[in-house]
Length: 334
Image 1: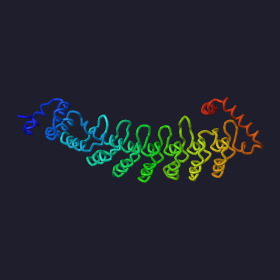
Image 2: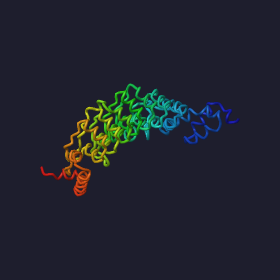
Image 3: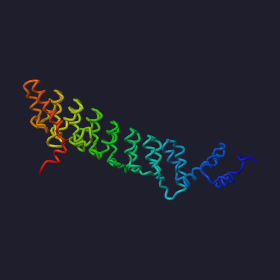
Image 4: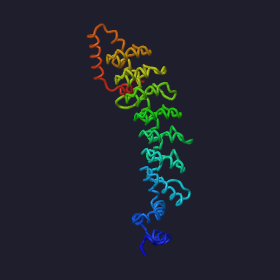
């Protein structure tokens, strides 16, 4: 009797006697008849022997037909029917890859929307990082979603979205009540990211938000201990400076150390008249000196271009000969 004419009960018994999942997979794919009869057994075997890897593969690829079958087999094989957790999380994989139907199916199945994977990343963080707007919207609609959960390095969904320039997702997160002031370990807050990316729309969106500290310092090597305003001045972005100064909470004179040069001094040294005017109108002080003893007023009030040049030359020699500012402050007597 041909194999295809065997009763389903016999075929199921044969499948049960095949030890390896890979061998069963080969047997199932002999022809369409065997596939239709035994595919559920293959998924059941995968759930029992391989920890539900079919769910992970389907979540990653977005194959919802496979995902549905694999989930049903997982339910039949396990009690309780919690989803497989090693090495990755199905919902996290689906969110990271932007597989919206798979995300919806997993949530309907009962997947935890705040499940954490490697580095404590959540599905919302992953979707926000890769710009999957529809997935973010679906996750935000879940009543138990944690909008401010953070991964290792204190990365929140709104932080990673801002860092990658996903303005629409930042809007969605803000509308949902997400906190926009969280910063990473190195001090990188969403507003810093927007300024560093030179993104006027995102900067404008974040300004005047109660959760945003416009005077926060960014502790990164290139822009060590600078506020968003100071970063905008250093990168010569007049439009960003103008937008930032719309927030009345901004203190234009904030520096990390008493002897650091202020944004106004930077703007004067750059000879950027627009930024100088904006900062002065915002109340920036002209008399604050840096560690070389130079103040914005000394340059602005210089009698001639030659005098101004001499002041800058003297300052350059002074700064070059001094140890780093942090060393000076640490070594200062009590």
